[in-house]
Amino acid sequence: MLEKQIERIAKESKDQIIANKFLSRLADGRLTRDENPFTHFCVYFAAFDQNSQRIFFGHHKKSGLWLFNGGHIDKGETVEKALDREISEEWGLKIPLLKIGEPKLLTITKINNPTKQTCTKHFDIWFFVPVKKVNFNPDEDLLDKEFYKTGWFDIGGANKLAIDPNTLKALSVFAKDFA
Image 1: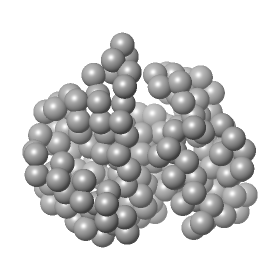
Image 2: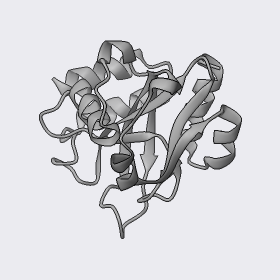
Image 3: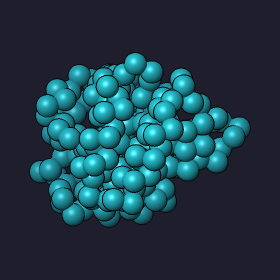
Image 4: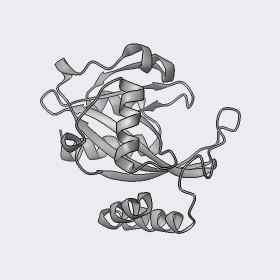
């Protein structure tokens, strides 16, 4: 099931270079961290408030970078199941997946942090989560496990903090599609 989902998502991507790399990685099999601790598929989920034109992200402890929330797809999960689980684990919230919709971006993250992670490459499937800032109340204790600090930022402010190329790419998509 996961294989077919990733294949469909890659084939629908506007970025054919990244899509082809996704399809090539898909052909290698062992798609999850449980099956291959070095290179596997992940989901990112980025909250945004269309009305205030703000995005929610934070200073991640393990990477030291300003990032959106995300996590690994576990063995036996679909993309949607991983997204639902990760939102629950990191935000403590249940957000209807129909409200989130289809992935908006695919990226590949090279990781060189051997003292903290065995991962060397993530194949990231990005979801942008529409929320109302005033009603968005993620669990602070859960956020504190992975982030030094989180908050709402306009695109310009977020761009000043972010140095990760994939986060910058996501911010560019926000600037173009949502702001």
